[in-house]
Image 1: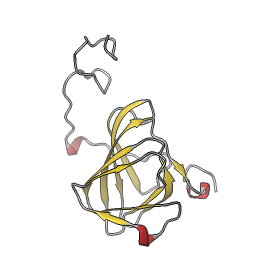
Image 2: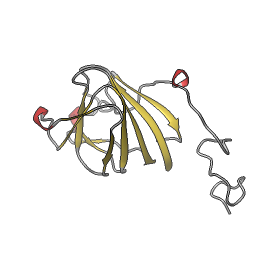
Image 3: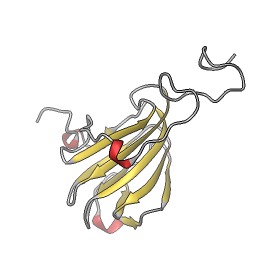
Image 4: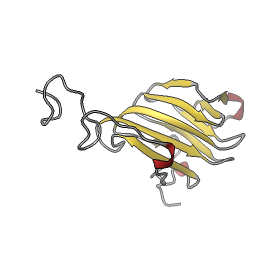
Length: 151
């Protein structure tokens, strides 16, 4: 029996409701939205799956020039692919500009679950694509940095 009950054994597993075989998403079809826990200047586009539920997902994250994401963790392992701009990421529980590493478009980064890290759109806008198994978790090292909390 297939994971999806309406799909015969041996068939491709659908990632979207009603999708059984092929999916193509063109750049002009991408819908950018705010996402809980991300800074106001950040936008997220859900491409495949549902990051709020169990299962595989692919999202794109766009940070506007100058936007910082404070140190945080995700419980899930994540694959980042830099789509455009320069992706600055640092590891650790404290935002430290000296720990930032710059990655050009085309770079693939594996970030293990639980690894504290931070981002900065230091030299302009950037877009990364994130692939993981959800649900997407986001916990800030310092709760005062979490946009979801009342200040």
